[in-house]
Length: 277
Ligand code: NAI
Image 1 (cartoon, rainbow, N blue to C red):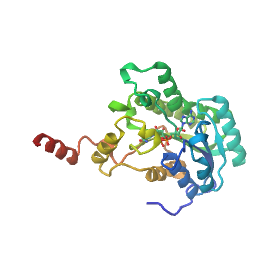
Image 2: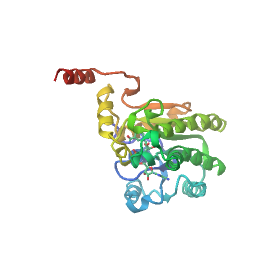
Image 3: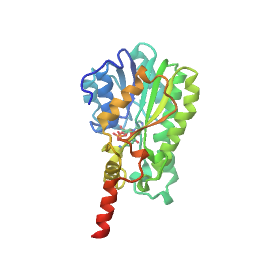
């Protein structure tokens, strides 16, 4: 486990979105990026100001400025980059998109009965916001050559997980935006990747019905078990660093090997025990 920094992001500046509380994946990303020498702006939705804990994260990362911005608002995204480039003293080197919310999922609406107004909002918050975030960066010419964008995703983009419902569609769109933008960003020597993370115990994760079962199943199937926030943060740091400068347009699985598994001995044994009982 990385405890001391290696200066992987020394001199780099950026934006880290989506840290709500210490369980948030991007909370760990911010701590790791700080450890590796980066300076960055923290951002989250204006509504999170009431119940989030960004002030503590700002303090823990050397006084990172906080910009409350709605990722579904172009004006807010423009303001975010104005603040970020001001803080950096020029173009920034990285953007971390760690934003998601499934309205139908949260409100217990089954996939067959999606309320489309909520569905659109889910797609807007969880996927189109990546497009807005990158597009605003390009509008402001705020992302430097050699820059890196990372967006958090889940294997529900490729496979159906019963209760993940509309979020599977949102992640499929998110990963498609990664590919579509990857081509265009490449012309500016900027890269963009989706990091497909294990089920992780966070506020957003807990909003999925049957999350504990999903979590335990993945943990028993993945040869290395589920990846936690801290390991996800370490991987993210490598993706923001120059060591991965030729990697773009990928969905990179950070899931202890889960995506390449079918069934594990542990699950087989449990199924057989159930049958025998
Ligand atoms: P989280 O609840 O800590 O983070 C989600 C963040 O999205 C929150 O900080 C929330 O305030 C922010 N957000 C929601 N609407 C917003 C808006 N309109 N504008 C700006 N920010 C907004 O949960 P977590 O799990 O850390 O989620 C981060 C990312 O990781 C999400 O994209 C999620 O889908 C993804 N992910 C989570 C997994 C899990 O099991 N927890 C697994 C794989 C991916």
